[in-house]
Image (cartoon, rainbow, N blue to C red; front, side, top):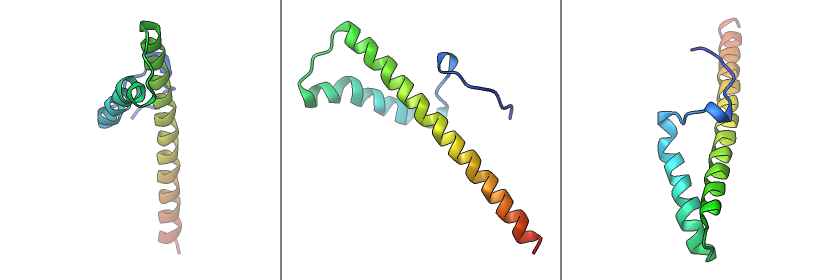
Length: 84
């Protein structure tokens, strides 16, 4: 797989995270206003969509880094175990 720098401006949600992404948007756009009694304006909806998308992107990037570090650690541990 090709390693390239992902940017928020051209990022697409991977298929395996679509369920979480949709759940986040339902919570932010519908349940949060119901619980807090807020009423969003059009600008409020747009701002919350941008905010939720950015937060999901940051979460995804951190998770991807952790998965990469864990895979490297497993390879290293396996290498040392095989060479004992």
